[in-house]
Image 1 (tube, one colour):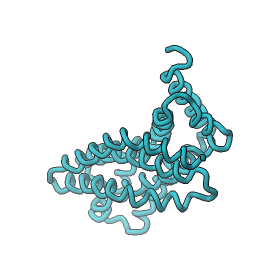
Image 2 (cartoon, rainbow, N blue to C red):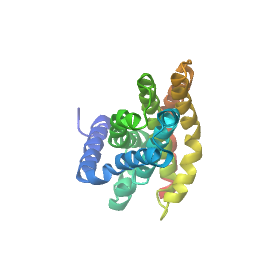
Image 3 (cartoon, helix red, strand yellow):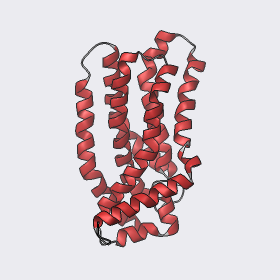
Image 4 (cartoon, one colour):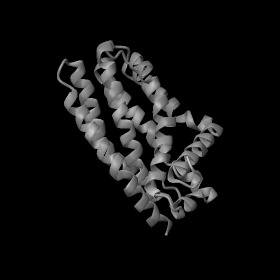
Length: 227
């Protein structure tokens, strides 16, 4: 790997972002704690009836995980904007979309992977049938990167605005409703013994499209926001 190449720039950016997350690991755990608290409150509010909790388990976990990731989206480019490195990325000779894709990858690994690891515990809290756990994990594995990619475009549009958290939520939430519907639909179909592959295939197709288009759209939006 030669210095100055695009590969070297991506590796350096990944190392830098992982180091920054490690230094602020307390903040990185906030989405995980938020999801656990939200899911734990449902049995307290609705009662301990196993059948009712099992019926709402998949939708509850998906909503909690997606909202937890939404909380962390605002910080995707914040530290880079504050220290001036975001402008350096824009002026870099390397493809901006590829560099932003690296930042989205770091966000997904540090935010979604802990939530995926905690999903079996959340499923136990809501008495989800064990046969549906695999479908839930597959839905989360497809839904969470979609949220990171879609959210990166919305964050790039609002990166220069003060107090953009509410605006960011208003932009992202309507876009992730189809993701939530298909993810929860696959889990519900698995619980009822029906075919669940079609919703997962739709999520996979959207993820492939988002992997190609979202970094390009985020790069264009970021250039507009910083000019």
